[in-house]
Image (cartoon, rainbow, N blue to C red; front, top):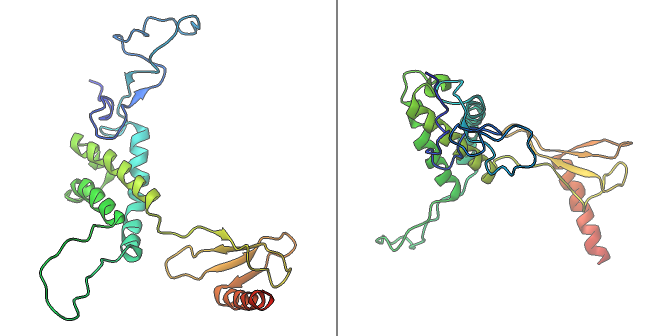
Length: 223
């Protein structure tokens, strides 16, 4: 008996049916249309279910789970450090009853959603993604976790992106070609580098801040 990917029938919330594009079930009206017949309009892009290759998941969905899980621990720890802080009402030292509520920040809701889905993995004696998806319910949790986690990584970035600094000139070549490179690891140093091919000098964050302060004062004096 061939085991199909748990997402083939569309029963996994938020996950499209996992089918082989261009191939059809025998009950599909397009099944009897000869391949290459361009005179007949096909109405189905493909509906044959994709077989499972790792436990109850196809290779593509298992790859999604592996990639999402590989980033999970670091992202969760980092977003907890840099995320929004809970708001607190100032009562000037007086105690008071609840007068309302503070909405949970988006990153915390994303963490809670993923935590609920990955709980079935953490409940196993040994945390192994391959063993996780060898159980049908575990495979469902895994694929929904992958979807929720990738959405969380996209919507709540924890790493600053490199960006150009158009207001400050390079102290070596005088060109506006400086780029801010955030640290690769937590608490590492920021680097500011010149992207001019004939220069390419690097600055530390403290050196850049001195130069930026000088240029800011010059612009104010000229204004």
